[in-house]
Amino acid sequence: MDAHRTFQVDLAGLVDLLSHHLYASPRVYVRELLQNAVDAITARRLKEPGAPGSVALDTAGDGLRVTDSGVGLTEAQVHELLATIGRSSKRDDLGFARHEFLGQFGIGLLSCFLVAREIVVLTRAAGHPAVRWTGYDDGRYLVERVDGEHPVGTTVTLLPRPGAKSWFAPATVLELARLYGDQLPVEVTVDGTPTTGPVVSAPWETTSTRAWTAYAERTMGLTPFDVIPLAVPEAGLTGAAFVMPQPLNPAQRGGHRVYLKHMLLAESAERLLPEWAFFARCVVDTSELRPTASREALYEDGLLDSTREALGDQLRGWLVRLARTDPRRLGEFLHVHHLGVKALALHDDVMLDLVASWWPMETNVGRMTLREFRERHGVIRYSATTDQFRQLAGIAAAQDLALVNAGYTYDAEIIERLAQVERGVRIERLDPTDLATRFETVDPAVELGLRGFSTAAQRALDRLGCEVVLRAFDPPSVPALYLVDRETTFRQELRATREKADPVWSDVLAALDDRRADTRPQLVLNHRNALVRRITVLPTADLVELAVEALYGQALLLGYHPIRPADAALLNRSFLGLLDRAVPTDPEAGP
Image (tube, rainbow, N blue to C red):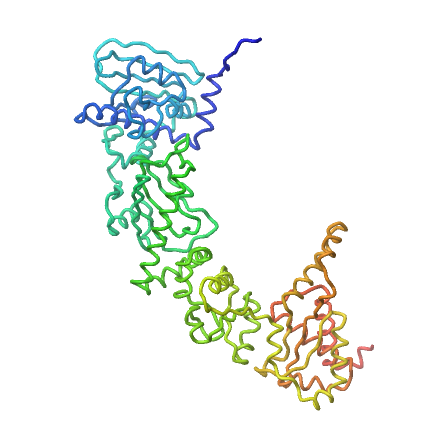
């Protein structure tokens, strides 16, 4: 039997993999250096509460030197932590409580190979001699003792790789140090300049709207619509959510500024809030949420799930309080961010009540909320599409039918859910063909006298599968309506798809097409319209056909119905035919 063997690891390849593919940008090398330095200071202060705490970045020379007053490392720790990739400097066997620290020294240091060909770590722990560790980007390293007096702490020196010197420019280093370290609880300087100079510290421990607003104006360049203080104790999370003052795309995930123990983790972290809360951007600091290996995002686990839910509850509570205490302000918010609130109302009863009570919907009797509409008209009768509403709003009003336009995003679903959740709410989706049942029939004697007209009109539209009906309805200004129910619309679309599909799919669709249930769309001619009455007494059948075809085309266009090739051909024929009848023949032009 073969003896067990160990895997062979190509250190140079592993360094390249981690340093070039784990991190999104070379700029994170400054964050990792600051992170390691702060962890070292934290470790020293656990043993010496009064120990100094400072981090100095020096760009003098070709590379970068970072010096901290932290705990330092012994020679054994250097071998264990810097020469063993993936080993954390916060291991309990070193006496460090993991909760107090930001990252993992061994992995984080590898990010420096994004910009450095060589890393030199000079470190000394109290009571131990100084040790120098030199690592190269090809995977080699060297550990050696250093004679002489050296203060307790660590100095990391980076020698730039070819083409990476721009990352060591003083202005670049200062900018990155301010980006990642402006909230750190230790003194950080770059060439003697404090990184906290022009930056406004986030007011983590306050719920002051004014303080958070000032922070947003300084760092984000905007004045938020409102500020919602956030706190999730189980995640060690504090911060604020800024309600954006302008509409945002609900489909676009929002990015949030996340700090881990006051070190910037990510500028655009996703999935911190529920998807419906797209109108808010957060700035938070957390001590318990886990970062990913690259420490550029949050790790998806049960704690993040519960934190996301808790933050959603706090945003929901803000909306409810606004409705109760400041309806005018709520109206302003809904005007900007109604899509997010309506999306939440589809599965949240509190938000459903908020939308029904405060969001004004378009109706044919003026804008009003669903609560107001129900109080005035009893039944919430609605049109499922905006085009259908535009076609039927005036006609329904003339028949004394109040109608809600539910064609906007989520409106129809909200109306239907309201009927499911609240007892006693009656809703009715208006089918266009139902409207025809409210129209008056023409006097039988008159209809009998128009039998010839009806025959010619029906003959004109038979080839299009449309039924011609003569009725009397208001307003008289509307000559004709094209009405089609949902079932007929479905079958029309099904058959149109069959004509374009390959034989296999055409056969599948044919199985769904039940011709026994066929109903035809209707062209309803309004006998109260003066033009229609004049058409009914035209002297010839071919002229009647042209006129009815023209009314059919106009009804399609005004009703925002799709125009099929056959409809387009009919429109063209009727237009040219009527134009030919209207324009006198020039005898000199010949036939």
